[in-house]
Length: 320
Ligand code: FUB
View 1: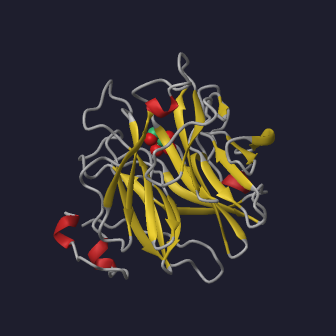
View 2 (view 1 turned 45 degrees about the horizontal axis):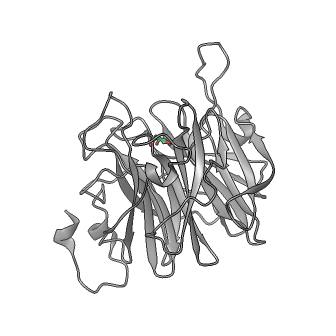
């Protein structure tokens, strides 16, 4: 229990032995963590698996925010978005799937997956606020993109100001976002996930005999030391965490290998790495707190040190 570790007034980072009590949040189920560093705070935007699973499937009605300044104490900052935020276009009271939030020019843009009202396929919308904890509004009242497999947004702003939104399950796309972050210019660009140089080999086959992709879902794009990184869930079920790199935000991508996994007590793994106060952290989720199953997942984190050449080492799961 993190409360037992409360060290009031800490502003520097605690040693690994203190904070690595995975899963790090115990009061709610917190899948699909999307960490974001802003000033001296690490914001953790997460989805929310309900305590009671309906129809033996993902039961997700809203999105949550936690924050920390020390990687020890995690503060619940509320439930800033629910499906009601996207009531113009999203199915209500379920399917609040993966998301990521970013700040630009003082505004916070939270990209979220939800099912399109009256349909079975998903879309990705964006809610905007003046503060990370909201209140958030949907300014465009429609999804930015929609269609089969269009889930799991990852947003990134390059040094030249060009913003990108990557997304997809099995298939992968990106769009170039405009400066307003709520529209894009040009077409959706499909990235070929069956390219084994880009995303690695996968030996499984679909029912129709076509090879599956190693790339599964949960793209997480960022830049470090001039190189672009795309982390993602890979390898079918259970998933593991893998990554590719590129010299441009638009690729071409080169597969680098597995980072973490197989998924631990859940069939999905989803998260992303982030640098905070000079340390590197890999966020992901597992199903340990609930005792397993794929629909009650919790955020975990591991500290790691990138290799000298920029590659990401293989990371081991730790538990309390
Ligand atoms: O949380 C719902 C779905 O499970 C996400 O969209 C996927 O990435 C997987 O984590």
